[in-house]
Length: 145
Image (cartoon, rainbow, N blue to C red; front, side, top):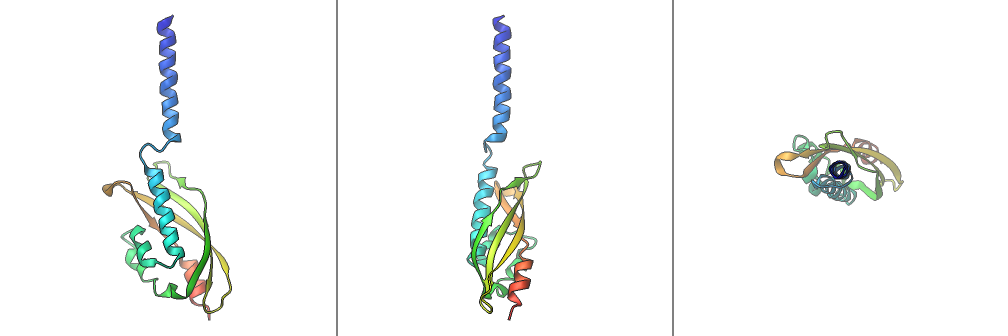
């Protein structure tokens, strides 16, 4: 009887630990992504495109940097980041960000949505990289006269 109770307790403990693994960030991936996403979005918000490029997928970083000059006339007043949505493999994630911005040429504030696609670059630890999509903001505001 004691063996059966002990076995059931061990099973319950293991099941609880298995569930806890999904509740707690034992690998640091989630906290690393939260930090990277927050820092990247803050840098974009303040127009620090060069600094933000450190978080961008290296395959598209040069193209991202080319937007720096076009963003000179864009001012972000605020942003809100939605919840992180991890892929099933926990190596990809998306987050929807709402930016409020205006062009210094028109001073009309507009709201824009960006879906940030993030992936874990495992070769360098818990470093996350973003594939940004700021085209809507750039196209609408940088072309304003």
